[in-house]
Length: 124
Image (tube, rainbow, N blue to C red; front, side, top):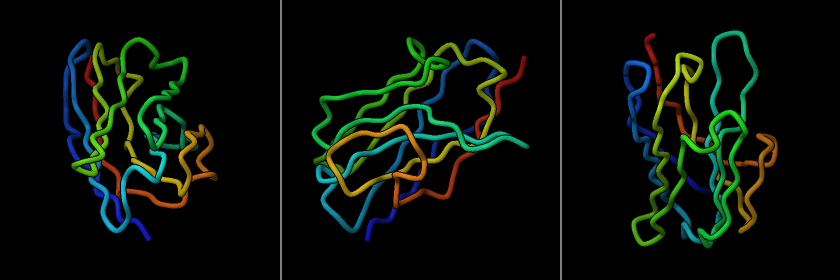
C-alpha cells in the first residue's frame, strides 16, 4: 500500500507560478509511476502530467505542455509539479496519483493510489 500526501496549492494571479509537492510513503518510490490529475467543479477528473518510476519518461496533457513540469526525487520519495504561466482555466483541485508499475499512464483508472487533493485557484 502507498500513502500519498499532496500540498502546495493556493491562490495566484494569472501568469504566476505554483509548485505542488507529493510525498509518498509505504513503498519504494522508484517502483511506482506517478501522475497529477485535476478536477474542477462539475467536470471529470482530468490528466495533467505523469512520470515513470525511473524518472526518464514524461507525459503532459496538451493544455499544460510547455507551462508545467513534473519531476521526482526518489531518494526523498517526492514528486513535484512546477506550474508556470498559470491561467484561470487551470483552477481546480489537483491530485497526485501512483500506480504499481514503472510505466507512466494518462488514465485515472490506471492509478491505484491517490492523494487527498490540493486546491489551486488562479484569478484573472
